Amino acid sequence: MFFCLLAATFQPCQNHVSAETPGTEAVYDVRDYGAKADGKILCTKSIQAAIDKCAADGGGTVYLPPGNWLSGTIYMENYVTLLLDSGSTLLGSRDPNDYAHSHTSGSKSPRGRTSASSVEPNFSYWSLIAGTSLEHVTIRGRGTIDGQGSAFRFKDRSRPKGIYLENCRDVLVEGLKMLNAGSWMQHYRNCDRLRIQNITVFNHAAYNNDGLNIDSCRDVCIWGCMVDSDDDAIVMKSLSLKPCRNVTIANCVISSHCNAIKMGTESGGGFQNITITNCTICSPRYSKVTYGRQRGLAGLALEIVDGGVLDQVAISNIVMKGVSVPIFIRLGNRARQYDKDEPKPGVGTLRNVVINNIVATETSNIGCSITGLPGHAVENVSLSNIKLGFEGGGTKKDASKEVPEKAESYPESTMFGVLPAYGFYCRHIRGLKFINVQLQTTASDQRHAVVCENVEDLLIDALDTTPPTAGFDQNPALLGSPGAAATIRLTDAKGVFVRGCRPRTGTELFLNLQGSQSERIVLMANDLSGASKIVEMGPDVAKTALALRKESQGQRANYPAQE
Image (cartoon, rainbow, N blue to C red; front, top):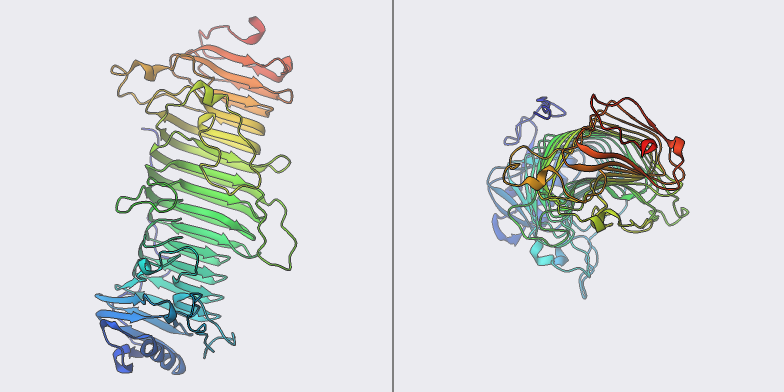
């Protein structure tokens, strides 16, 4: 068995509170304020009146009993819990005039609000539930929030989000089912101590249907959620110069036609101290694609392209099935500004990433990529106990493809097309480790397994490109692809240590070494008996660049110096 996933048990970030009962605090039933549960009569004013009264009395629970409650924008207040009981549905109005901001032709003026709790003089936001500068805000229950976003299936105007909370502290969102926003389902911006747990999201009604967006927030726990979205599913962003910091995502089931778990695209402040663990990622099964691909784009996407710092990220125990690209890491230079008074950002920093215990099957033939820019290296990335299964089918022509830098391009796992490596294409990196990485293809593939260009301090330990044992008799091509490129290609690589590798039987060439800058390349303690030829060196590579230590017993003496 390749490795055992850790069977760790995670508990919610705080003691779990029942999502069905209001508890002992004061309860404000929206029916007492004139709300009608027929899904036709607009209840915005009634629900808001209940929230305002609750806040004025010092806090409590605003209760939505079973029924359909039609509403436009409602504003949360300090120490208020919005409780949707089982069988209760908060329906977003299909009329854009019922929301805080409306940019449709001939619409009413934006419906702003002077909040009883907020320091904001006049806050308004294009969302079903909104709030700013609040403390102790809770939205919970076993009911449903349905944004009816199909009424906003257009691109040229603003569309309402499901929940928008800004500058809030001590926020809990729990237990709810969330459907069909006009845009992002949830957007939490510059919030502290945010907990999102045990929610179910299905967001496929309109455009930009993200599932859950954490923007410039601190001390965040996302636990036990099921998110299925057309656009990115669980996303960290920095639409400001403040980073997302101290974030944990655990025990979630995620599907997306775009990226399942993503940091970026917006990265003004970056992402620091992030833990992602024990999650399952799969292609969407109940929806047709609007953005991205039917199968989804990246399972894990880590992107710094607008300045900012990505630092101290640990990802572990992730299982994926059917996505296009399992792992995509990108340091680019789109350089979008998030504050008009600030100068255009320079290239950011992406460093100290640990990815461990990953299994991915039925992924596309594109391959994974980890790329920085010339003069701006990705730093200290470690991948261990990784098992990836690709479709394969790549050609020798694909293996020799030159990959453009695309420094200013929008970052996406498909941005370079089919890569020269079916496993990992890596460029402009300092400090890269592959430890116990297994790469397989369903169809025969003539590309490299790993390509590294302008990489310094590289360790490849126990790289396994052996195909699965099933099918050898039926498909002898699995034992080797005649005319295939070298298993590993290194170009202008410095300080490389390759050990513990065992290329599959029928491998024609194990290592292709290119570039005048290549130096200090060491092969040691490998079993290369399955390879017809161990090393091929380009004419500009110094003869002293490669050091070969004693290999396995009986290995062919086919080193370059003896040819």
